[in-house]
Amino acid sequence: MNKTVIFNRPKPQEESGKIAQLIVLSAVGTDRAGVVNDIARVILDCGGNIEESRMTALGAEFAMLMLISGNWHTLTKLQTELDKLTKDSNLEITIRKTGQRTGRPDCMPYGVDVVCLDQPGIVFSLASFFSARNIEIADLATRRYAAPHSGSPMFSMQMTINVPGTLSIAHLRDEFLEVCDQLNIDSILEPVKS
Image 1 (tube, rainbow, N blue to C red):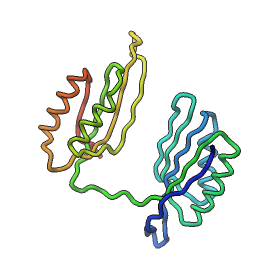
Image 2 (image 1 turned 180 degrees about the horizontal axis):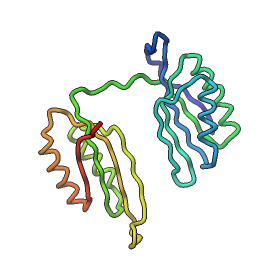
Image 3 (image 1 turned 120 degrees about the vertical axis):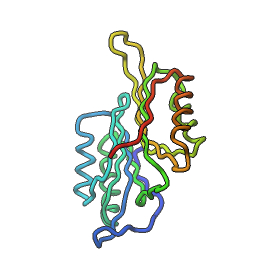
């Protein structure tokens, strides 16, 4: 079922003297040339601006997440025009109002890179490790690929985490590397450089 849905109504944000709204758009549909163009055109025609986005092909599907800014009128127009787009193409689109992300000034951003032979449970194991230490995963990307020469199924993961300033980085790094050794994972944990 193709449907556009709106949830929640956060308070409007002030931006350059105008009331600005932030909208998260998620879309999934059959991968084809032009799908990004179709959605970007609707956003632009409705007066929206793409602030951030993530897009990728997953199997035979194409998935995207976007943070769009605009005013209340933009939201109304977007809902109508995206409903038309879902009827004309094989897309499922959801939009949701959101607010500005609140920063965590007590946290330090760290990058995590992981490479290993593909095996079930890697994401779960590492997410559990960070969750148990109240460490937020801010961004996560994974992929599976064939190793050069051998063709073995490999897994890589990159993430950005927010480490609370109260944690000892040396102790965290030691525990993290110990877990990675147990899982037979090559990994790096290092500060994010601007």
